[in-house]
Image: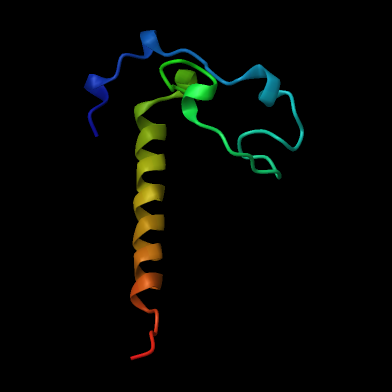
Length: 82
């Protein structure tokens, strides 16, 4: 990780308010919907990095690597017809 390359003074919250206020139809909500990142902002940036920290980044990165490794192990165990 390279926290020295991160400039949090430039971080800004970009969560579409029309979705953030919904109960079901929102990012991570119970109802999925199709969208392109530039549907919400011209540069395609969506999210809220304002609460980021090196510690949180390391935790999220480690969890993502662990999930990927588990998924690859599952794929490796597939039994295909010959």
